[in-house]
Figure (cartoon, protein in one colour):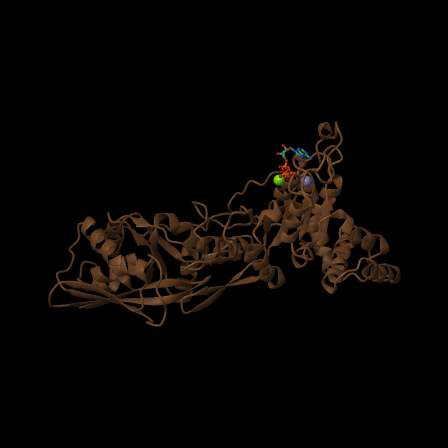
Length: 484
Ligand SMILES: Nc1ncnc2c1ncn2[C@@H]1O[C@H](COP(=O)(O)OP(=O)(O)OP(=O)(O)O)[C@@H](O)[C@H]1O
Ligand SMILES: [Mg+2]
Ligand SMILES: [Zn+2]
Protein backbone atom coordinates (compact mmCIF):
# COMPACT_ATOMS: atom_id res chain seq x y z
CA UNK A 1 0.00 0.00 0.00
CA UNK A 2 1.46 3.25 -1.14
CA UNK A 3 0.55 6.90 -0.56
CA UNK A 4 2.35 10.16 -1.05
CA UNK A 5 2.18 13.76 0.05
CA UNK A 6 4.24 16.82 -0.78
CA UNK A 7 6.12 19.26 1.36
CA UNK A 8 8.66 22.00 0.71
CA UNK A 9 12.09 21.88 2.32
CA UNK A 10 14.11 24.99 3.11
CA UNK A 11 17.39 25.57 1.34
CA UNK A 12 18.67 28.94 2.51
CA UNK A 13 15.94 31.42 1.61
CA UNK A 14 14.40 29.12 -0.96
CA UNK A 15 12.55 25.87 -0.85
CA UNK A 16 12.47 22.68 -2.88
CA UNK A 17 9.55 20.37 -3.34
CA UNK A 18 9.94 17.06 -1.54
CA UNK A 19 7.82 14.02 -2.22
CA UNK A 20 6.99 12.02 0.90
CA UNK A 21 6.12 8.45 0.00
CA UNK A 22 4.83 5.97 2.59
CA UNK A 23 5.03 2.29 1.70
CA UNK A 24 3.28 -0.32 3.87
CA UNK A 25 4.32 -3.93 3.50
CA UNK A 26 3.47 -7.11 5.33
CA UNK A 27 6.16 -8.33 7.65
CA UNK A 28 7.47 -7.57 11.09
CA UNK A 29 6.31 -4.10 12.25
CA UNK A 30 9.09 -1.58 11.59
CA UNK A 31 9.42 2.09 10.65
CA UNK A 32 12.24 3.51 8.55
CA UNK A 33 12.78 6.92 6.98
CA UNK A 34 15.10 6.92 3.98
CA UNK A 35 16.27 9.68 1.65
CA UNK A 36 19.06 11.67 3.34
CA UNK A 37 17.18 12.75 6.42
CA UNK A 38 19.16 14.43 9.20
CA UNK A 39 18.81 13.64 12.90
CA UNK A 40 15.91 16.03 13.63
CA UNK A 41 14.21 14.47 10.66
CA UNK A 42 14.89 10.92 11.91
CA UNK A 43 13.35 11.90 15.22
CA UNK A 44 10.15 12.42 13.25
CA UNK A 45 9.58 8.69 13.73
CA UNK A 46 8.90 9.09 17.44
CA UNK A 47 6.80 12.21 17.01
CA UNK A 48 4.73 10.80 14.15
CA UNK A 49 4.06 7.51 15.93
CA UNK A 50 3.12 9.24 19.16
CA UNK A 51 1.09 11.94 17.37
CA UNK A 52 -0.97 9.36 15.47
CA UNK A 53 -1.69 7.47 18.70
CA UNK A 54 -2.75 10.71 20.40
CA UNK A 55 -5.14 11.49 17.58
CA UNK A 56 -6.88 8.18 18.35
CA UNK A 57 -5.86 6.73 15.02
CA UNK A 58 -4.25 3.37 14.31
CA UNK A 59 -0.50 2.93 14.02
CA UNK A 60 -0.33 0.41 11.16
CA UNK A 61 1.09 -2.97 12.17
CA UNK A 62 3.21 -3.17 9.01
CA UNK A 63 6.71 -2.70 7.81
CA UNK A 64 6.58 1.03 7.07
CA UNK A 65 9.11 2.73 4.83
CA UNK A 66 8.95 6.47 4.27
CA UNK A 67 10.99 7.72 1.35
CA UNK A 68 11.87 11.38 0.95
CA UNK A 69 12.69 12.37 -2.62
CA UNK A 70 14.81 13.74 -4.21
CA UNK A 71 17.39 11.71 -2.29
CA UNK A 72 20.29 14.08 -3.03
CA UNK A 73 18.68 16.93 -1.06
CA UNK A 74 19.62 16.92 2.60
CA UNK A 75 16.37 17.02 4.64
CA UNK A 76 16.70 19.16 7.73
CA UNK A 77 14.39 20.03 10.56
CA UNK A 78 11.05 18.95 11.88
CA UNK A 79 8.65 20.30 9.23
CA UNK A 80 8.40 16.84 7.66
CA UNK A 81 6.40 15.43 10.62
CA UNK A 82 2.99 16.39 9.30
CA UNK A 83 3.46 15.25 5.69
CA UNK A 84 4.97 11.97 6.94
CA UNK A 85 2.02 11.38 9.28
CA UNK A 86 -0.48 12.15 6.51
CA UNK A 87 1.29 9.81 4.07
CA UNK A 88 1.27 6.98 6.62
CA UNK A 89 -2.41 7.59 7.38
CA UNK A 90 -3.31 7.64 3.70
CA UNK A 91 -1.30 4.47 2.99
CA UNK A 92 -3.25 2.73 5.78
CA UNK A 93 -6.50 4.16 4.39
CA UNK A 94 -7.33 6.18 7.48
CA UNK A 95 -7.36 9.26 5.26
CA UNK A 96 -8.91 8.94 1.78
CA UNK A 97 -6.09 8.70 -0.76
CA UNK A 98 -7.59 11.09 -3.27
CA UNK A 99 -8.21 13.79 -0.68
CA UNK A 100 -4.54 14.71 -0.46
CA UNK A 101 -4.36 15.82 -4.10
CA UNK A 102 -3.71 19.54 -4.55
CA UNK A 103 -2.37 19.84 -1.03
CA UNK A 104 1.05 20.25 0.51
CA UNK A 105 1.78 20.05 4.21
CA UNK A 106 4.39 21.42 6.60
CA UNK A 107 4.62 21.35 10.38
CA UNK A 108 6.13 19.75 13.43
CA UNK A 109 4.16 17.36 15.62
CA UNK A 110 4.30 17.45 19.39
CA UNK A 111 4.13 14.05 21.10
CA UNK A 112 0.48 14.73 21.93
CA UNK A 113 -0.36 15.35 18.27
CA UNK A 114 -0.52 19.14 18.46
CA UNK A 115 0.93 20.95 15.48
CA UNK A 116 3.79 23.41 15.90
CA UNK A 117 4.83 26.09 13.39
CA UNK A 118 8.23 25.70 11.74
CA UNK A 119 10.63 28.39 10.55
CA UNK A 120 10.37 29.39 6.91
CA UNK A 121 6.73 28.48 6.40
CA UNK A 122 6.37 31.56 4.16
CA UNK A 123 9.13 30.22 1.91
CA UNK A 124 7.64 26.72 1.94
CA UNK A 125 4.27 28.21 0.97
CA UNK A 126 5.84 30.10 -1.93
CA UNK A 127 7.29 26.78 -3.07
CA UNK A 128 3.89 25.15 -2.71
CA UNK A 129 2.38 27.84 -4.94
CA UNK A 130 5.03 27.34 -7.60
CA UNK A 131 4.61 23.57 -7.26
CA UNK A 132 0.91 23.92 -8.09
CA UNK A 133 -0.53 23.15 -4.64
CA UNK A 134 -3.84 24.83 -3.97
CA UNK A 135 -3.75 24.50 -0.21
CA UNK A 136 -1.09 24.12 2.44
CA UNK A 137 -1.88 22.29 5.68
CA UNK A 138 0.07 24.02 8.45
CA UNK A 139 0.04 24.96 12.13
CA UNK A 140 -2.67 27.44 13.10
CA UNK A 141 -0.05 30.13 13.83
CA UNK A 142 1.33 29.86 10.29
CA UNK A 143 -1.91 30.74 8.49
CA UNK A 144 -1.06 34.42 7.89
CA UNK A 145 2.38 33.54 6.46
CA UNK A 146 0.82 31.10 4.02
CA UNK A 147 -1.70 33.74 2.91
CA UNK A 148 1.19 36.15 2.22
CA UNK A 149 2.56 33.61 -0.25
CA UNK A 150 -0.74 33.56 -2.10
CA UNK A 151 -1.69 30.04 -1.02
CA UNK A 152 -4.82 29.01 0.88
CA UNK A 153 -3.83 27.74 4.31
CA UNK A 154 -5.53 24.87 6.08
CA UNK A 155 -4.51 25.88 9.58
CA UNK A 156 -4.86 23.09 12.13
CA UNK A 157 -4.03 22.88 15.81
CA UNK A 158 -3.87 19.11 16.03
CA UNK A 159 -3.23 16.17 13.72
CA UNK A 160 -6.83 15.04 14.42
CA UNK A 161 -8.10 18.28 12.85
CA UNK A 162 -6.09 17.65 9.69
CA UNK A 163 -7.50 14.14 9.48
CA UNK A 164 -11.06 15.40 10.00
CA UNK A 165 -10.49 17.92 7.20
CA UNK A 166 -9.30 15.29 4.73
CA UNK A 167 -12.18 12.98 5.67
CA UNK A 168 -14.59 15.79 4.87
CA UNK A 169 -15.82 15.90 8.46
CA UNK A 170 -14.69 19.47 8.80
CA UNK A 171 -15.43 22.37 6.46
CA UNK A 172 -12.50 23.80 4.58
CA UNK A 173 -11.51 27.06 6.28
CA UNK A 174 -12.96 30.29 4.85
CA UNK A 175 -10.66 32.12 2.46
CA UNK A 176 -9.15 35.05 4.31
CA UNK A 177 -7.53 38.24 3.07
CA UNK A 178 -3.74 38.35 3.47
CA UNK A 179 -2.65 39.95 6.75
CA UNK A 180 -1.71 43.63 6.87
CA UNK A 181 1.64 45.09 7.85
CA UNK A 182 3.32 44.24 11.14
CA UNK A 183 3.17 47.23 13.47
CA UNK A 184 6.66 48.14 14.69
CA UNK A 185 7.17 50.86 17.30
CA UNK A 186 10.20 53.03 16.48
CA UNK A 187 11.17 55.78 18.97
CA UNK A 188 10.85 59.35 17.68
CA UNK A 189 13.56 61.92 17.00
CA UNK A 190 11.47 64.51 18.84
CA UNK A 191 12.88 62.98 22.06
CA UNK A 192 16.43 64.05 21.17
CA UNK A 193 17.41 67.52 22.38
CA UNK A 194 20.32 69.44 20.92
CA UNK A 195 22.98 67.44 19.02
CA UNK A 196 22.09 69.29 15.82
CA UNK A 197 25.17 68.16 13.95
CA UNK A 198 24.50 64.51 14.73
CA UNK A 199 20.85 64.91 13.75
CA UNK A 200 21.96 66.39 10.45
CA UNK A 201 24.36 63.50 9.85
CA UNK A 202 21.58 61.03 10.67
CA UNK A 203 19.35 62.69 8.06
CA UNK A 204 22.09 62.55 5.42
CA UNK A 205 22.79 58.92 6.32
CA UNK A 206 19.10 58.11 5.87
CA UNK A 207 18.83 60.00 2.57
CA UNK A 208 21.80 58.20 1.02
CA UNK A 209 21.82 54.89 2.94
CA UNK A 210 25.30 55.83 4.18
CA UNK A 211 27.13 54.16 7.04
CA UNK A 212 27.44 56.36 10.12
CA UNK A 213 29.78 56.39 13.11
CA UNK A 214 28.79 58.39 16.19
CA UNK A 215 31.61 59.02 18.67
CA UNK A 216 31.75 60.87 21.95
CA UNK A 217 31.57 60.74 25.72
CA UNK A 218 28.97 58.59 27.54
CA UNK A 219 25.36 59.55 28.04
CA UNK A 220 25.02 62.20 25.32
CA UNK A 221 22.54 60.46 23.05
CA UNK A 222 24.60 58.32 20.64
CA UNK A 223 22.55 55.16 21.15
CA UNK A 224 19.38 57.21 21.32
CA UNK A 225 20.02 58.75 17.89
CA UNK A 226 21.02 55.45 16.30
CA UNK A 227 17.79 53.77 17.42
CA UNK A 228 15.79 56.47 15.71
CA UNK A 229 17.24 55.92 12.22
CA UNK A 230 14.60 53.38 11.03
CA UNK A 231 11.91 55.95 11.79
CA UNK A 232 13.27 58.41 9.19
CA UNK A 233 13.95 55.81 6.48
CA UNK A 234 11.45 55.32 3.65
CA UNK A 235 9.04 52.44 4.27
CA UNK A 236 9.84 49.28 2.31
CA UNK A 237 8.01 48.75 -0.97
CA UNK A 238 6.09 45.50 -1.61
CA UNK A 239 9.02 43.57 -3.02
CA UNK A 240 11.47 44.71 -0.32
CA UNK A 241 8.94 43.99 2.42
CA UNK A 242 8.38 40.46 1.14
CA UNK A 243 12.12 39.87 0.95
CA UNK A 244 12.65 41.09 4.53
CA UNK A 245 9.64 39.12 5.78
CA UNK A 246 11.01 35.97 4.12
CA UNK A 247 14.33 36.33 5.95
CA UNK A 248 12.58 36.78 9.29
CA UNK A 249 10.33 33.80 8.56
CA UNK A 250 13.32 31.55 7.88
CA UNK A 251 14.92 32.78 11.12
CA UNK A 252 11.71 31.93 12.97
CA UNK A 253 11.36 35.56 14.04
CA UNK A 254 8.11 36.59 12.38
CA UNK A 255 5.82 37.99 15.06
CA UNK A 256 2.66 36.05 15.96
CA UNK A 257 -0.16 36.88 13.61
CA UNK A 258 2.25 37.33 10.72
CA UNK A 259 2.04 40.12 8.20
CA UNK A 260 4.50 42.03 6.07
CA UNK A 261 7.48 43.74 7.67
CA UNK A 262 7.17 47.18 6.11
CA UNK A 263 9.34 49.13 8.56
CA UNK A 264 13.07 48.88 7.76
CA UNK A 265 14.44 46.38 10.27
CA UNK A 266 16.68 47.43 13.12
CA UNK A 267 19.12 44.97 14.67
CA UNK A 268 21.55 45.70 17.46
CA UNK A 269 23.54 42.57 18.37
CA UNK A 270 25.43 42.68 21.66
CA UNK A 271 29.22 42.75 21.42
CA UNK A 272 29.35 39.29 23.00
CA UNK A 273 27.41 37.79 20.07
CA UNK A 274 29.31 35.10 18.15
CA UNK A 275 30.46 35.51 14.57
CA UNK A 276 27.87 32.92 13.54
CA UNK A 277 25.12 34.89 15.27
CA UNK A 278 26.14 38.12 13.54
CA UNK A 279 27.00 36.74 10.11
CA UNK A 280 24.80 33.64 10.00
CA UNK A 281 25.68 29.98 9.94
CA UNK A 282 25.48 26.93 12.14
CA UNK A 283 24.68 23.33 11.21
CA UNK A 284 21.32 24.39 9.74
CA UNK A 285 22.26 27.77 8.33
CA UNK A 286 19.96 30.50 9.51
CA UNK A 287 20.24 34.18 8.69
CA UNK A 288 22.42 36.11 11.13
CA UNK A 289 22.00 39.66 12.39
CA UNK A 290 23.58 41.03 9.21
CA UNK A 291 20.80 39.43 7.14
CA UNK A 292 18.07 40.22 9.64
CA UNK A 293 19.14 43.86 9.17
CA UNK A 294 18.81 43.54 5.36
CA UNK A 295 17.27 46.74 3.93
CA UNK A 296 17.44 48.25 7.39
CA UNK A 297 19.92 49.21 10.06
CA UNK A 298 22.64 47.19 11.78
CA UNK A 299 23.76 48.99 14.93
CA UNK A 300 27.07 48.02 16.47
CA UNK A 301 26.74 49.84 19.76
CA UNK A 302 30.13 50.27 21.45
CA UNK A 303 31.88 49.30 18.22
CA UNK A 304 35.41 48.80 19.66
CA UNK A 305 34.05 46.19 22.09
CA UNK A 306 33.24 43.85 19.19
CA UNK A 307 35.85 41.16 18.63
CA UNK A 308 38.03 41.68 15.61
CA UNK A 309 36.81 38.51 13.79
CA UNK A 310 33.22 39.74 13.91
CA UNK A 311 34.20 43.13 12.50
CA UNK A 312 36.32 41.54 9.79
CA UNK A 313 33.52 39.16 8.85
CA UNK A 314 31.26 42.16 8.23
CA UNK A 315 33.50 43.36 5.44
CA UNK A 316 31.98 41.00 2.89
CA UNK A 317 28.38 42.12 3.39
CA UNK A 318 29.52 45.75 3.53
CA UNK A 319 31.19 45.23 0.18
CA UNK A 320 28.60 43.27 -1.78
CA UNK A 321 25.47 43.08 0.37
CA UNK A 322 25.51 39.31 0.87
CA UNK A 323 26.86 36.69 3.24
CA UNK A 324 27.82 33.20 2.11
CA UNK A 325 27.29 30.54 4.75
CA UNK A 326 28.73 27.04 4.54
CA UNK A 327 26.32 24.16 4.98
CA UNK A 328 26.53 20.42 4.63
CA UNK A 329 26.66 19.71 0.94
CA UNK A 330 27.29 23.25 -0.26
CA UNK A 331 26.69 26.80 0.80
CA UNK A 332 23.84 29.24 0.89
CA UNK A 333 23.92 32.96 0.21
CA UNK A 334 21.77 35.27 2.29
CA UNK A 335 21.19 38.90 1.36
CA UNK A 336 22.71 41.36 3.85
CA UNK A 337 22.45 44.88 2.45
CA UNK A 338 22.20 46.88 5.65
CA UNK A 339 23.12 50.35 6.70
CA UNK A 340 25.83 50.19 9.38
CA UNK A 341 25.70 52.50 12.37
CA UNK A 342 28.47 52.37 14.95
CA UNK A 343 28.78 54.15 18.25
CA UNK A 344 31.89 54.51 20.36
CA UNK A 345 33.57 56.46 23.06
CA UNK A 346 36.84 58.14 22.19
CA UNK A 347 38.69 55.96 24.71
CA UNK A 348 37.97 53.07 27.10
CA UNK A 349 37.26 55.34 30.09
CA UNK A 350 35.09 57.54 27.91
CA UNK A 351 36.48 60.86 29.06
CA UNK A 352 38.34 61.71 25.88
CA UNK A 353 36.68 64.49 23.93
CA UNK A 354 34.82 65.61 27.03
CA UNK A 355 36.04 69.02 28.19
CA UNK A 356 34.51 68.41 31.62
CA UNK A 357 36.42 65.19 32.32
CA UNK A 358 39.98 63.88 32.50
CA UNK A 359 40.97 60.73 30.59
CA UNK A 360 42.62 58.12 32.80
CA UNK A 361 43.49 55.58 30.09
CA UNK A 362 47.07 54.33 29.81
CA UNK A 363 48.66 54.67 26.36
CA UNK A 364 48.71 50.85 26.05
CA UNK A 365 45.01 50.63 26.79
CA UNK A 366 44.31 53.36 24.28
CA UNK A 367 46.38 51.55 21.64
CA UNK A 368 44.52 48.31 22.15
CA UNK A 369 41.20 50.13 21.85
CA UNK A 370 42.25 51.71 18.57
CA UNK A 371 43.73 48.53 17.18
CA UNK A 372 40.34 46.88 17.26
CA UNK A 373 39.14 49.19 14.54
CA UNK A 374 41.04 48.45 11.41
CA UNK A 375 41.58 51.26 8.97
CA UNK A 376 39.64 49.18 6.45
CA UNK A 377 36.56 49.10 8.66
CA UNK A 378 36.74 52.81 9.57
CA UNK A 379 37.03 53.55 5.87
CA UNK A 380 33.55 52.13 5.37
CA UNK A 381 31.89 54.76 7.51
CA UNK A 382 30.87 57.50 5.11
CA UNK A 383 29.96 59.84 7.95
CA UNK A 384 31.89 60.19 11.18
CA UNK A 385 30.55 62.55 13.79
CA UNK A 386 32.02 63.49 17.15
CA UNK A 387 29.20 64.51 19.45
CA UNK A 388 29.96 67.16 22.04
CA UNK A 389 28.87 66.94 25.67
CA UNK A 390 25.86 69.33 25.76
CA UNK A 391 26.35 72.51 27.75
CA UNK A 392 24.36 72.88 30.94
CA UNK A 393 20.79 73.82 30.14
CA UNK A 394 20.92 72.56 26.55
CA UNK A 395 19.09 69.35 27.43
CA UNK A 396 16.27 71.38 28.93
CA UNK A 397 15.70 73.05 25.55
CA UNK A 398 12.83 72.63 23.13
CA UNK A 399 11.93 69.20 21.76
CA UNK A 400 13.63 68.34 18.49
CA UNK A 401 11.96 67.98 15.11
CA UNK A 402 9.78 64.86 14.85
CA UNK A 403 10.80 61.83 12.75
CA UNK A 404 7.82 62.17 10.38
CA UNK A 405 9.00 65.60 9.18
CA UNK A 406 12.57 64.41 8.69
CA UNK A 407 11.39 61.34 6.82
CA UNK A 408 9.52 63.51 4.31
CA UNK A 409 12.78 65.24 3.37
CA UNK A 410 14.57 61.90 3.21
CA UNK A 411 11.96 60.45 0.87
CA UNK A 412 12.12 63.54 -1.36
CA UNK A 413 15.92 63.38 -1.48
CA UNK A 414 15.86 59.70 -2.41
CA UNK A 415 13.52 60.46 -5.29
CA UNK A 416 15.95 63.12 -6.56
CA UNK A 417 19.06 61.00 -6.06
CA UNK A 418 18.17 59.20 -9.27
CA UNK A 419 18.69 62.44 -11.17
CA UNK A 420 22.44 61.82 -11.41
CA UNK A 421 23.70 65.09 -10.02
CA UNK A 422 27.03 66.21 -11.50
CA UNK A 423 29.71 68.21 -9.67
CA UNK A 424 30.46 71.78 -10.70
CA UNK A 425 34.07 72.50 -11.73
CA UNK A 426 34.69 74.21 -8.38
CA UNK A 427 33.25 71.29 -6.44
CA UNK A 428 35.45 68.92 -8.42
CA UNK A 429 38.56 70.99 -7.71
CA UNK A 430 37.75 71.06 -3.99
CA UNK A 431 37.38 67.28 -3.91
CA UNK A 432 40.67 66.78 -5.81
CA UNK A 433 42.56 69.04 -3.38
CA UNK A 434 41.05 67.21 -0.41
CA UNK A 435 42.09 63.80 -1.76
CA UNK A 436 45.70 64.99 -1.73
CA UNK A 437 45.57 66.85 1.56
CA UNK A 438 43.78 64.29 3.78
CA UNK A 439 44.82 61.89 2.08
CA UNK A 440 41.77 59.93 0.99
CA UNK A 441 41.91 56.38 -0.31
CA UNK A 442 40.17 55.50 -3.54
CA UNK A 443 37.25 54.16 -1.54
CA UNK A 444 37.24 57.27 0.64
CA UNK A 445 37.13 59.49 -2.43
CA UNK A 446 34.15 57.62 -3.88
CA UNK A 447 32.35 57.78 -0.56
CA UNK A 448 32.84 61.52 -0.11
CA UNK A 449 31.54 62.01 -3.65
CA UNK A 450 28.44 59.95 -2.83
CA UNK A 451 27.76 61.80 0.41
CA UNK A 452 28.16 65.16 -1.38
CA UNK A 453 25.57 64.01 -3.93
CA UNK A 454 23.17 63.04 -1.13
CA UNK A 455 23.63 66.46 0.50
CA UNK A 456 22.90 68.16 -2.82
CA UNK A 457 19.81 65.99 -3.27
CA UNK A 458 18.57 66.95 0.21
CA UNK A 459 19.03 70.60 -0.74
CA UNK A 460 17.20 70.04 -4.05
CA UNK A 461 20.22 71.62 -5.74
CA UNK A 462 20.64 71.34 -9.54
CA UNK A 463 24.22 70.07 -9.15
CA UNK A 464 26.81 69.22 -6.52
CA UNK A 465 28.35 72.54 -5.43
CA UNK A 466 31.50 73.21 -3.35
CA UNK A 467 29.42 73.68 -0.19
CA UNK A 468 28.04 70.15 -0.55
CA UNK A 469 31.53 68.69 -1.00
CA UNK A 470 32.77 70.75 1.97
CA UNK A 471 30.07 69.40 4.25
CA UNK A 472 30.72 65.84 3.09
CA UNK A 473 34.44 66.30 3.76
CA UNK A 474 33.74 67.60 7.25
CA UNK A 475 32.33 64.17 8.15
CA UNK A 476 35.61 62.53 7.07
CA UNK A 477 37.99 64.88 8.81
CA UNK A 478 40.52 62.87 10.86
CA UNK A 479 40.12 65.37 13.69
CA UNK A 480 36.60 64.01 14.14
CA UNK A 481 38.13 60.90 15.52
CA UNK A 482 41.33 60.69 17.49
CA UNK A 483 41.27 57.00 16.60
CA UNK A 484 41.97 57.63 12.94
N1 LIG B 1 20.55 64.70 23.41
C1 LIG B 1 19.73 64.11 24.29
N2 LIG B 1 18.42 64.45 24.31
C2 LIG B 1 17.59 63.86 25.19
N3 LIG B 1 17.95 62.93 26.07
C3 LIG B 1 19.24 62.56 26.10
C4 LIG B 1 20.19 63.13 25.21
N4 LIG B 1 21.38 62.56 25.45
C5 LIG B 1 21.19 61.67 26.43
N5 LIG B 1 19.91 61.66 26.83
C6 LIG B 1 19.35 60.82 27.90
O1 LIG B 1 20.40 60.02 28.42
C7 LIG B 1 20.17 58.63 28.18
C8 LIG B 1 21.44 57.99 27.71
O2 LIG B 1 21.68 58.35 26.36
P1 LIG B 1 22.38 57.35 25.36
O3 LIG B 1 22.23 55.97 25.83
O4 LIG B 1 21.91 57.63 24.00
O5 LIG B 1 23.88 57.81 25.56
P2 LIG B 1 25.17 57.30 24.78
O6 LIG B 1 25.76 58.49 24.14
O7 LIG B 1 24.84 56.15 23.94
O8 LIG B 1 26.09 56.88 26.01
P3 LIG B 1 27.12 55.64 26.19
O9 LIG B 1 28.41 56.06 25.55
O10 LIG B 1 27.24 55.51 27.65
O11 LIG B 1 26.49 54.47 25.55
C9 LIG B 1 19.05 58.58 27.17
O12 LIG B 1 18.25 57.45 27.35
C10 LIG B 1 18.30 59.87 27.42
O13 LIG B 1 17.37 59.66 28.45
MG1 LIG C 1 25.26 54.12 24.07
ZN1 LIG D 1 40.15 57.55 28.68
